[in-house]
Image (cartoon, rainbow, N blue to C red):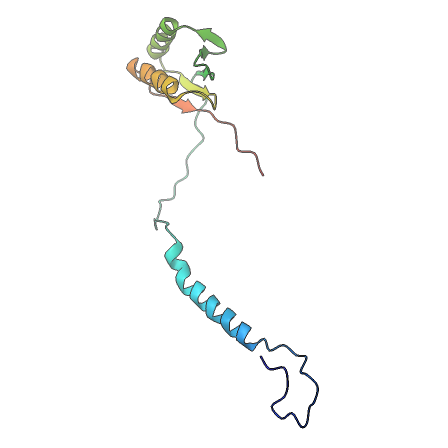
Length: 140
């Protein structure tokens, strides 16, 4: 950086201006590098998805709310069940025509084992409509 003039006979006091040209040059080089390297950071798969219009699904089928709390207790429409009662309820639901939709609500602290056991029991009885219900994520 120059603090004075090359010809010190004409200008005797120090130069007060800052030379920003090197900083601008460095910033332009970094900008070009980032522009060239940006496509390498995208990991998206390029897909050409088909477009379709679908009608809203009919809500005529019955729904059953199954809840599992943190302790692993299973509730069938807000009624606590024992293991043998759960099997009987699942068998009764599988026999209905059309089959009801099971809406599974599990507490955040519920062990995965309890959820997996319920899913296996429902599949073992022939139930095919299982929906996981969650709370929407709160905006930050």
